[in-house]
Image 1 (spheres, one colour):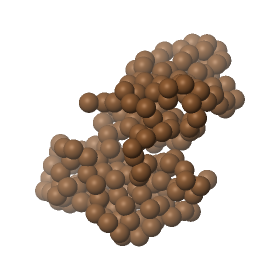
Image 2: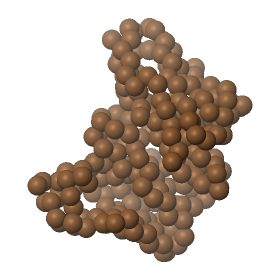
Image 3: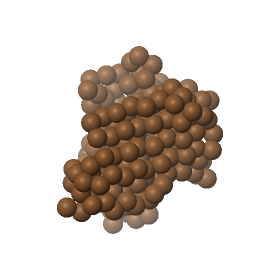
Image 4: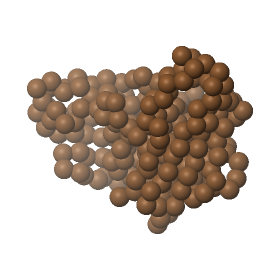
Length: 117
Length: 113
């Protein structure tokens, strides 16, 4: 089955620093990847849609200068949380769409727990 | 606001009992998907429904897609402790071309032995 790897799984950083999260599709080419944020016991909130070779499309209310997304290849998308603050602490999850056969199924990475001190 | 509504938010079930979680969209969907997220884990794809009135079964799980393609349900029979987790429905709008999904709030299932 389709496998999506997300790294790191856990990161603790100081306020004001930047953190990069990687999302890789291991056994398929993902033209589209998605970045979500999830608060405890809540649903997934879509932050942005990342298309290979083009600028990401951000959802309303998500600061694009704060959450930088790069989708440089068909298997890698990165999310950089710039100048992180404690309110950015959250569970960030990426997913990748396997376009084979016209499917719109999303396969999720294991997530990254970010704690900003 | 949230366009895909899911109820109930919590479901406390005795082992062996059945339960159903429901999903409703304010707009017609192209397809609907169901995911399961175990505590501390990430969402795992369960199934995709595409056709109006479609019914699919996976062992003790039965998934339905409404005739109008605006609602869906997941019914679990003879609940087991392994069914613990949060079940999310996620709908794709007919106008979407990228595969964006609107997630419901999820139903958190707790199973008592």
